[in-house]
Amino acid sequence: MGIKKRSFQNFRRLNQIAFIVAKYGLGELAEFTKTKKAFRLDESTVAKRFRRMLEELGPTFVKFGQLLSTQEGILPEAFIEELKKLQDEVEPFGFEEVKHIIEKELKKPLNDIFDEFEKIPEASASLGQVHKAKLKNGKWVAVKVQRPDIENIINSDMFLLRRLGSLIANKVRHYFHFNIMPLIDEFDKTIKKEMDYEIEAHYIDTFKKNLKPFEYVYVPEVYWEFTTRRVITMEYIFGYKATNKQSIIDAGFDLKDLALKGAKVFWYQIFDVGLFHADPHPGNIIIMNDGRICYIDYGMVGKINEDDKLSLIEMITGFIQKDASKIIYAIENFATVGVSSNIDELLNDIEELIETYHSLPLKRMQLSKILRDVFAVLRKHSIIIKRSSSRLLRAIIIADGVGRDFYGEFNFVEVAAPYFKRFAWKFYSPSNILKMLFTPNPNYLLLLKKFPKAARSIIDTLQEGSIKVDVEVNLFEKMINTFRYVARQIGISLIISAVIIGTSLLLAYRVGPKIHSIPLVLIIGVIIIIILAIGIYKAEKRL
Image (tube, rainbow, N blue to C red):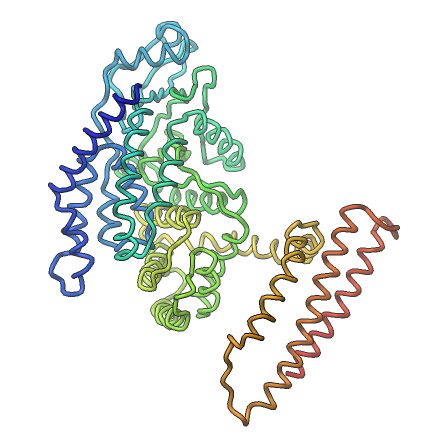
């Protein structure tokens, strides 16, 4: 596409966007944020108009609205609920275009690949549409075909979305306390991945391997010889959509059993695999004719690291054990807690929240409601959930909702308990702690390198008198003694760190003799650490 032609199209599209924004009175959104305390504008009404505006702006903006609906800790609940109603459904494109794209991508006539091909699509979305077909070998398949010229359309809309985002960024930051540009960047990456069907196909193969231990779960087969960046061909799944519970009941399946099985599979993905289906809503779940659960549409997946797993466990146990410090620990990992955040007020709000759940028995604790209440507290304190964490927490909320929809007394926390315990046992096991201590880690060297500069900075600050301390005279002697013991602990801790770093480096380069195949340097290092740890323990007792 020529530069002049593209510029003209961008200009025309920009005028169209400006007209639609004016039509829905987006200016009132800013007015709402200023005056919401006075209730001059109704939050749900503004949210509804915002959703309708995105729908009229077209597929790119609808998908961006769907991304915004996952940001539970950013937007008010009325906006989140309204944006969840956004449907990624558009008019299908014609069969001749479908045929042309398939033949161009697969480099074969359509009739040489399929015995049958249904011209009317089973589903039509913003990026592509799905047709049912039968291969020459007699197997039924679902063929997803990308929309013609969708890549240019998306690129053009992304250019304009970035321009629009930069224009409203300051107002959004001021009124909603978050930066919209990183969200636009994430959306850009996400939608470009979704446009590459080979990425989704690879994820399908990965999940098929990961979920093999479960006999009651099925993942479709990908036909790679008929799959490209713009066309994906996979096994057609016959069964009942989870959106139609009555059909599942009529087929004789037990909804309670399905809910519990689905929950086990979800927690297995989180704690045992670390890769999970991030959009497990009912439309992406099919109950097959033989009763197996089949997940479809792997365009949105999430990854979880060990820190996030531990934080999730700490948050839940914090509510169960009435321990606000555990919840704060989880929040600090899941969210970006700014320097300006008032930790004391946050702690008070978390403690109040704990009281509402502490008296409830475990079977009545709703994980999705707990997370939504935590999000409300974070919004109050302008604390933003990290984008990587929001995908995990959103998936938990969706999966919990599906389970409760299938079985009223469903308890996600009870199902998760064995997975929590197994992970915690593994994480805190002596072998894992030793592994973490003595695995060569470049971060140790970086920390050692930065230490002199950090120490110099502290000394300079002290010399300038920038740090002010107010103390009462009658506590002075006690504080002096405390500082002495703390200084001793810090000194011993630094020596321990140095021993760990030195031992790790020597192990990495296999330096020194061995005793019964155990490196002598490892034995000496462990002995030194134990002796110094005893010193720290004694110092703590004297405090």
